[in-house]
Length: 147
Image 1 (cartoon, rainbow, N blue to C red):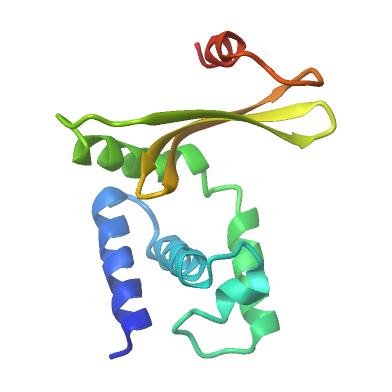
Image 2: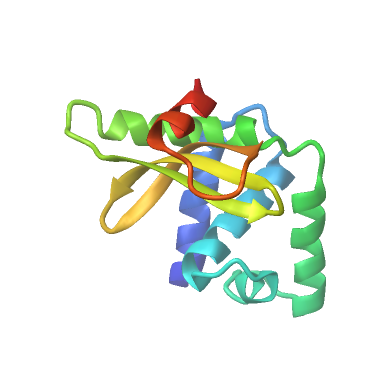
């Protein structure tokens, strides 16, 4: 069995444990998305689907991924909550570093994130999008937006 397929099954089993009420088709697609994001190290759909252990042509696999991401029944907060809880529980009792970031994502909009610093990466815990003013924001302003 290929490493990609083993990794896919591990992710799928973990998602089934965290979201037992979710449809198996959505869990499969989410496991494929996670696998593709991790192995391709990019957010481009055509490159993500090339890492999937699934038979099919790239355009049809990209359409499958696009339909999954456009599905209104896939609620980000519901899917990500168990992952964020698992991350926080994993580091319980240890000293952790939190990273607060404010990034401009469009004209007059800012993405605010609080992430966990881990091995030269940040693992997002919470995020929100706000109408923002131009220029830099202070730490106090960033914290006030999350309260």
